[in-house]
Image 1 (spheres, rainbow, N blue to C red):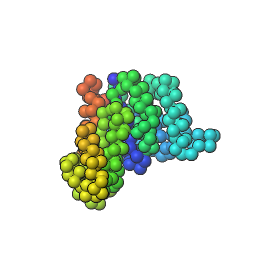
Image 2 (image 1 turned 90 degrees about the horizontal axis):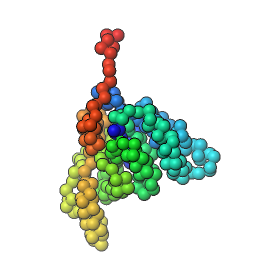
Image 3 (image 1 turned 60 degrees about the horizontal axis):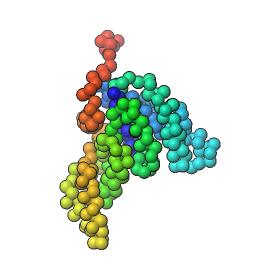
Image 4 (image 1 turned 180 degrees about the horizontal axis):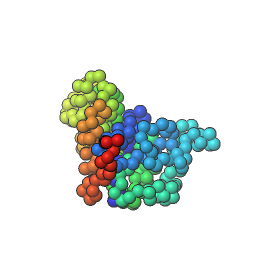
Length: 268
């Protein structure tokens, strides 16, 4: 059985930075993971790329040859990936052992994980290949400055949860860049009635029924919970990794893979 994280979230939410920090953390503790680039528009990486969609198709080539714009070109690239799941992806996955741990760094176009089927079909293919998969949704903490933006972020995350039907971890990224942490921390695990009260204060009275329905929806799906990610603290990435491992039962059915370090390395 393999294990995988599907790292999703809006553009600029810190997905690649999260993947890089996760790789560095695992390298430090001697744990083996493999980062996969699923963004055909990506250019630079701060981590070793184990698999790269650009070996199959790149956004620049699609835009040049087909005359498509960035968004249309990216959708075309992901459709091409979907058409090659049984060929290119299977061939790449055959390079890994049954208990390997893959982290898929996804593009930031929100429609890919909200309503078009490509990523869902990609996930179903991973499941058929005997992978336990967890969706890791990143939301920029600097975006969550008031209740309306918080609810908007929750709705986007909930849309991904419903579309992908995966165990789901929500992360407030870039906490190390937030100047007023109190304003953000109150949204990490808020009480629904406090959210409703704050939402009613900010919006016109005619929206009260809508506000109540939104809060009930978020609460019923257990969405009102985010884990903060502060890259200055090793314990932060360690805690998030532990939560994800628990979701996909990593370590329960397979031994943690530890690198073999040469005892003489420290003497050189």
